[in-house]
Image 1 (spheres, one colour):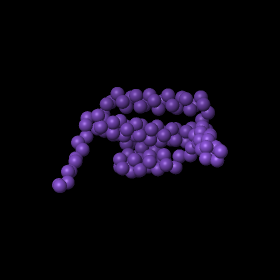
Image 2: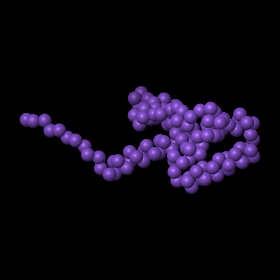
Image 3: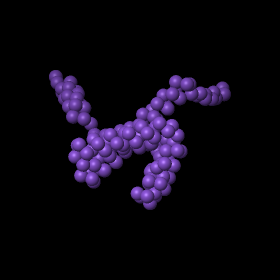
Image 4: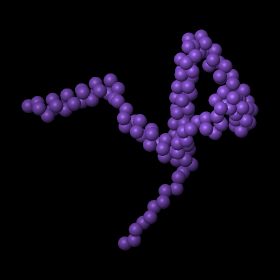
Length: 139
């Protein structure tokens, strides 16, 4: 009897699901990095809530202005001189982390594996263990 080889052809729904998962992960990653940068900036500058909110509003208006351009390369060309002036650095080296999809997936998997259980999960597990012990040792 011969071996049957199966090849899975991804459906449009499978492709869309993977794309959505990638977009969701990227969104979380960007939000985390943006939040870290924002909080670090406010802490470094000694901003309280009022100044932090003013800075946040200014940054959002800059995002909106660059979104209006609708051109990533144009926005980079506008920001490049400021990055060079402020940091003496090229935009290409501004973000040094370049993860592949596989590396992002491994990082996400490792994060979930090392996650500590919540208090509710710990209580539920303890109750289940006690119930199993009662069943095993009751006469």
